[in-house]
Length: 55
Image: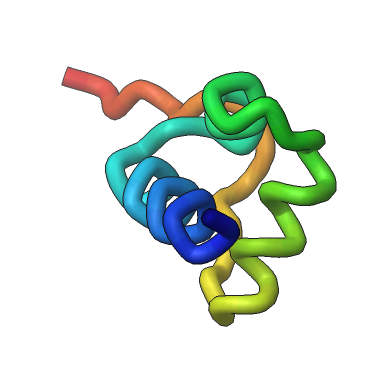
C-alpha cells in the first residue's frame, strides 16, 4: 500500500499538484508528503504560485 501512495505522490507532484493538494488527496500530512519526495530525491519547487510571465 505504501508503494502505491508513494507512486501517486511522485506522479501528482510531477504533474504540478501542490504538497497541500497531495496531502489532502492521500489523507497524509504535509510533512509526510514532503518526506516521500525527499526519500526519492525529488527537488521541491519554491513556495507560492508560479509567477505569470509578461505578455
